[in-house]
Length: 240
Image 1: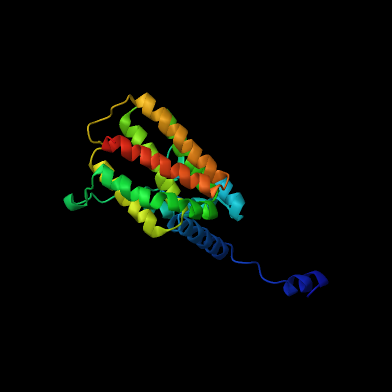
Image 2: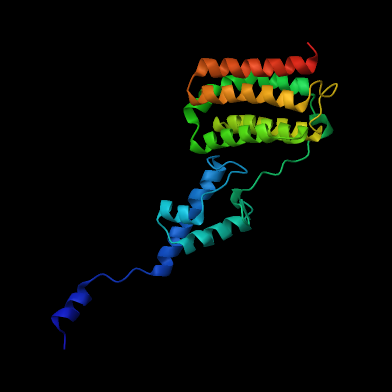
């Protein structure tokens, strides 16, 4: 015998398949994060939000987030470090061939030609992740206690600036520059004439000013500061 209650239940739409919904949400989350990595919105080495934050941001269950993270780890797109968090995997740089090992003055001359011109793109396109990357690299420069750590941090800052231009060709060029410098052991002609502390202080001041001008959206000042910084570095390397 059908009662009013059973008739009402029969007229309601069927309950959605929970597993299918979870798979669809997981697929959408996976696509969003993978796209953000591919497009540079999550840069190599950047820390990803926590599972709780991703769950709240995309309105999906924590278990769905966890499964998505496992899939991205299996594909080598992210790495999980116990006690530290989840990070975008750093791209492996192919070792440059001998023909591709350029001198430091050559690389600085090339950077002088294109880096100052990037600031307008950076100011127009940089997002929150980029500003975080700039600040993180500056902090790493200030904390560096070896030449290698200092140079890794300084080049990380300028790579982050190049990356914020969202121009893949420029990013690829800067990756080649970094690979060449690493292959050379971060050395420079004649060694380092000044103590690390003095070089670090000057470089941190100059680069902090560049970042401040970018943040203030002051194109002429950012371009001039970038130009002057590279000219000064080139002059110190060339002995001029």
